[in-house]
Length: 90
Image (cartoon, rainbow, N blue to C red):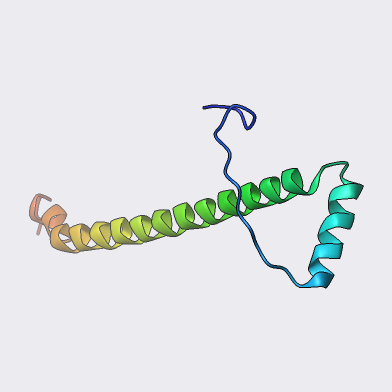
């Protein structure tokens, strides 16, 4: 994977309320970063969080599907164990 300095960069324009712009400039300054780096890192963090949430959602769905399948298989074979047991002596 290419580092951030080696990747092709593109420019985008966004509109923010003035209050958020001021908070953004203040926060980036407090972090010792320029606004572009601060915004880029914030977007990357948000995208990673969203990807993780999507992954967890898909894993949960797969787990629930597997659990349902396991229950169905168990139901199909619940009497098969008893078929092979020797009958109780009378």
